[in-house]
Length: 444
Image (cartoon, rainbow, N blue to C red):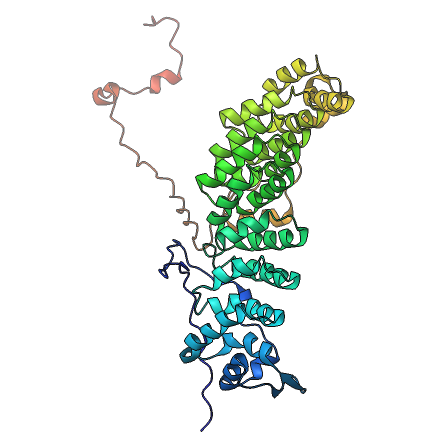
C-alpha cells in the first residue's frame, strides 16, 4: 500500500500569536509567497525519517534529489519539519523548540530557517525564541534570526512587532537593512501596521531613519485612511529637506484619491523653502480640478512666485484657467515684474492677438475658410444621417423618403350663361350704330 502524501496546510488565517484568535483585517488576506515551504533535498525525506533525524535517533539518510544522491543529517531533518503531515505537527513543534536551544549553531540556524514556514501551522513560543536568538552569541545565528524576522513580518506583524522595531534601529547596517526589507514587504499585507511603525520613526532624532520612513509613506499613500494623511502632514513639517522632498512626491497620487486633502497639502508645499517640494506641489495642482477656487488661487499665486520653476509651471496652466480677455489682462500685469527671458517670451505669446496685431497674412489666415472635411469623416456623417457642410441631410438608413404626391390637373370652371341685357329684352338692336345718322336728322 503506497504511503500517504503529507497533508498540506490549508489557507492561512492570520491569528494573534499570543491569544490564537483570528485577527480581524476587514479584507481578504493573501499569504506571502515566502511562506510556501522552500524546496530542497530535505523534501525527499520520508516523514518518519524527518522525525528520526530531528531527534537524533537517526544519524543520516541518503536521498535522491535532482538525479543526485545526497546525505541528509540532523540539520536537514530540522529544516524539513515544515513538511510533516498534520498528525505530526505537535511532536514536530516540540523538536523545533528544542532545536532553538541546541548547542550547535548550525542546528539553531536550521530551526530559524524553518520558523516562518512552520509558524503558519503552529506558532506557539516561536517568536519568543526568535527575539532571543536575535541577540545570540554567534554572529551567524544573529544574521539567520534577522532574515527569519524579515520573512515572518508580512504574515505575523503582531508576533514580531517589538523585534522589528529594534531591528529597524539596530546599529549593524546589514541587520537594519534586512529589517527594512521586512517592513517594505509588510506594506503589501498590513499597511496599517506599517503606518504605526512610521509614526514612531518620524519622531527619531536620527535623520536617516526619518528619511527611510518617508519612503514607506510613499508605499502606503494609496490607503485612504486618516493615519496616512497624518504621516504626510508631519513629514511635510520635518526640518530635513530630504524628508519633505520624499513625501512631497506622493502628493500627486494623494490628489487623485482625495481632492480636498491634496489641495490642502499642495497649498502648504507650494510655500516650502525647498524648490523641489514646491515643484511637487505644482505637479499636484495639475492633477486637481483647476476650476476649483483654491486650486485657481494657488496657480495665480504661483505665477508670481520667487522660484522661476514654479512660475513657469503655473504660467503654462493659465490658458486652461481663463478666457483670452482675462488672460491678456493678467499677462499685462505679470509682464511688469517678470525678469526671466523665456517667461517673458511665453507671456508675450499669450498676449498676442493675430486679428488685431498680426500681419496682413496672419489676419487673412484667421479669416480663411475651414479645412475640408476628410472623406472618411464624410462617410461616417452620411452613414449617421447627418449633414456635411451645406449639403442637405441624406435619408436615414432603413427609412424611405415618402413619395411626393402627383400634381393635380388644373381645374376648369364651367362657363356660366350670361344674362340678357335690357336692350335685348326690349327688342332693340345695335344695327343702326353701323351707319352714321343723316345730317338733316337730329342726333340724340
